Length: 349
Image 1 (spheres, rainbow, N blue to C red):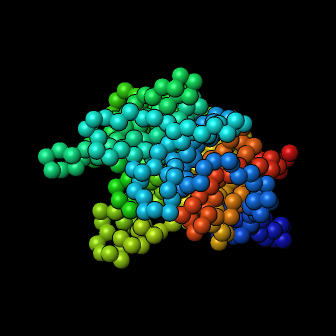
Image 2 (image 1 turned 90 degrees about the vertical axis):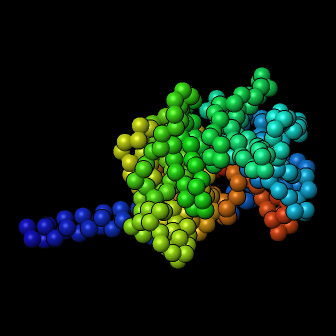
Image 3 (image 1 turned 45 degrees about the vertical axis):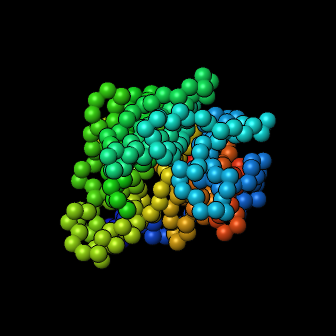
């Protein structure tokens, strides 16, 4: 009986250690297929330039934020949205009407929406009596009708960043950037005010809504180091707060059942894959920085790209598009990568 009791305690201790290791990203237990992925790369026949941001809108349609003169110092408003049609190598500029009062326009944070349209934030700098205001709207471009629609106008000088729509697009989670490394999340509905969620978090960022509508993933920190941003007293504390790695969380769509999935993985750009219980993100795990895929059922981590890069998945999840750096990062180029589908198998399959 004593031997059996000791054996049971050993089993329990083993499970505890395993759980802590998975939560804290303390081990190096992961699969690295990034080298294989790089051998299955297909550069797109697009013009030379500077690309940042990519959205794979429909099976044959991809959008980029692009500048044709990457070697010159460029401001963000020198970039525009370009559309590339696979199969025919079509290359077009998306024309966005510019309000008369808008002195400097730019677009950013573009992504595929659940209805297979393109979403993006449109920003205008407006001069008013020697003061420059910043007005931002969330807009949608629908490929079939070639139409633009303003989904939401943010308050003046409100700084929207990443966003995530529910599958039926009746509501979304919107990130606001308050400063370097300080971010909040809000729930927004088509009719009604914006409501902040996770008020007890020191910061929260990069929301992503699951394809089945049940879960929301995001990066955040509940506290660091035991303080909120407004409680930081000196430059050292502010620096430590900004540089602290992010944790990965999941919660139900209504905000309940909040749980931490991974600690200290840093990161940005969370995406749910079409295959189901898989999410990808840019971050660090096991001492490696790159694009990662996490199997939420098996907790298996897979490194699919060996460095940070703008990326998106094809609508069927069988391919990935990445922005490769060229010429010391001044010139970038998009390429499509074939994704081995066995990374989406569970251990029972």
